[in-house]
Length: 211
Image (cartoon, rainbow, N blue to C red):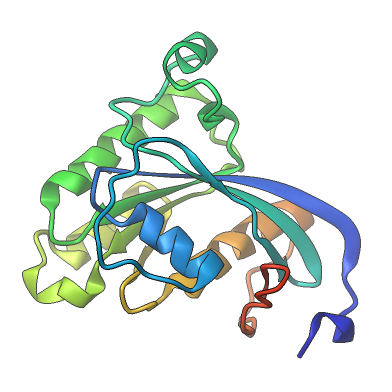
């Protein structure tokens, strides 16, 4: 299937996704795998904000994404003044959705996103603002530092958030992650009940993914 075979809503929706997590959990790798289908085995710490601008199509609606790859932040800004002072240009407080990434081999990295999630809830109205928790490095599941069942129960039942495990290294569940997130956003925007949709290959020339 190509874009020419689709009837696409001409109103392009602009979505800002903030990706947060402790150092070394694989935030950048997840994004680059989704946008560029690439993985760098060398760890390069993210020291400044990076922005990626792919587009996706889901339920015949075209979304222009602004994915913000954030470096480590010690806390989520409690108000606009703190954001302006410490995280100018990040746009954290007005994100459309949040992806909180932890390393399944590191309990400390999960504690970090737990704290960040609590701070987000205390800092802004989260009505119709999706938040997904992502356990990366599933390829190292034998070295798991925290029970998957325990995390999934906490995130899904108590936090009422989306949860998925993935492997940026193996490109496993990367597209699924963004598909599930965009289904949630599309449901909020258009009232669609989430349904099973077919994932197409990325159209690399225009960085458009049909979900």
